[in-house]
Amino acid sequence: MSKNIDKAQIEQGNAPENADRRSFFGKSAILGAGAVAAPMTAAMFATMAKAKASEAANSPVVHPGELDEYYGFWSGGHSGEVRIMGVPSMRELMRIPVFNIDSATGWGLTDESKRIKGESAHLLAGDSHHPHMSMTDGRYNGKYVFINDKANSRVARIRCDVMKTDKIITVPNIQAVHGLRVQKVPYTKYVICNGEFEIPMNNDGKASLEDVSTYRSLFNVIDAETMEVSFQVMVDGNLDNTDADYDGKYFASTCYNSEMGMNLGEMISAERDHVVVFSLARCEAAVKAGKFKTYNGNNVPVLDGRKGSSLTRYIPVPKSPHGMNTSPNGKYFVANGKLSPTVSIIAIEKLDDLFSDKIKPRDAIVGEPELGLGPLHTAFDNKGNAYTTLFLDSQIAKWNVEDAIAAYGGKKVNYLRQKLDVHYQPGHNHTSAGETRDADGKWLISLCKFSKDRFLPVGPLRPENDQLIDISGDEMKLVHDGPTFAEPHDCMMVHRSKVKTKKLWTRDDPIFAETLAIAKKDGVDPMTQNKVIRDGNKVRVYMTSIAPNYGMSEFKVKLGNEVTVIVTNLDQVEDVTHGFCVTNHGVQMEIGPQATASITFIADKPGVQWYYCNWFCHALHMEMRGRMLVEA
Ligand code: CUK
Ligand code: CUA
Image (cartoon, rainbow, N blue to C red; front, side, top):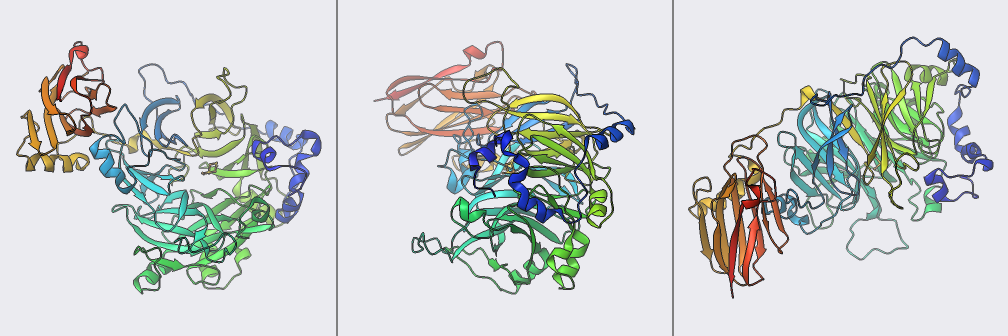
């Protein structure tokens, strides 16, 4: 890395033009070059254009009343939520609060959501990055979406039948869960995710800032059903992104900072970092055989997968790789160079030989195409092409995987198909169903970190720009600019045929099962009874709601009582959601049709306090309110 360019410039892609941007990465470029074909010339592009066979012709227009073909699941970035978008219309369909609090639904406020947040219920913030759906045989199965919270080292699960978060765990022994994917084959038994920041093992206050010899980064394997950490694997370097194969055998993670540096200069001193490949069978066997340690006073098995371990292999790749993407034909892991203009193609079929030491780690690399500056993430179509975001160049490079492999083998072929300007500085990109066997080569989303001049200015803070690109023809065609808030890091697109959602809640839903158990103990049937239960200083108020009435239009409590209001929505009508909101108390929630929801607060203000329905439900919605008398 050249010394005369600062990090901020690199990150923002603002390296001065006259400073020869391309030479900043000269060293890495040479490293990655090998037998790589010459860069595209204008003449080559012209030839390509002539040979053009098919035009991109998907329609991004979804007329009023028509439905989108894909559900898009978007991370909400530092808003901490997940959003459902319709693709190709790019209409925002729903927001799913996960790590944040949300006054519309009461997420983070209701008793049910606090139970789901568990030990981290007091944390009201989050930084969500990677939403990925559970799979069966390498295809989305419509059951769950998993998402990480980098800020608070958490992983959450969203149930796709109701599109609500139903589990959140804090992963022990690590800091900052970053890359997250799912086991694709035979089904999502495990969610895999990387602990990014290296921390002392144990992190009990006895380690120092100077001696970093016990600092480690762990790979985490979480049971998708129980949402418990099955085991962790200690590695060398710090982990970034990850993905799984299509055989149910290997996981691969990029690692930057193989130097184990504690500041920027140290972190980027080595010309090569690595990809760590994990053997699932060997890891499971090691756990079974008890070959693990535990740390920090918890009982999660931690395996030693550092260099030399039989559980892992380390494949050297150029400088600070970032994204990790498996090609949908199941043949390759692609590690994206970030500080190198290349991506590294790892042949998954060679991994058996690598693990039995028949080949050397670099022998698993079958291609290292040079694509441009700042490759971060790669997506795939169903025709053997890959699409890589170039953060610094503000472009997407379309390239052919087999041609890149042939070029690496010494053939004179041009693997680059097209470079498309995007606006600006793309991070993740994703193709429709592109991380599954159903990759269909129709749409590509480029999640651009900066929008600059693309929208009306809205002050110093700008939206990001999620661009929709038609990839159905030979050339990528940009068809839509979509402003989004707070940096969606990643997204995925699921064909609508895979998702089946409920129209009404069912009364036996686990999300409110515990609330119903409390009602049972109180001897109250919340579907038929409106009742106040006094239990010392605690008061539980059970009321029904059916548009436009609450079952209880008044109740009394004493000043200082801890009040829980449990509302059951009796409406059996699609889309008739009620709310419950107490004025001046910060009490607000949603009660979906046939759901029970509860919220607990202290009655700390004497006098009459109105409560009202805050979701418009009926012509007499304004009249849907009642009084709580707080007696001094
Ligand atoms: S990371 Cu943000 S651009 Cu968290 Cu997947 Cu690559
Ligand atoms: Cu019920 Cu508005």
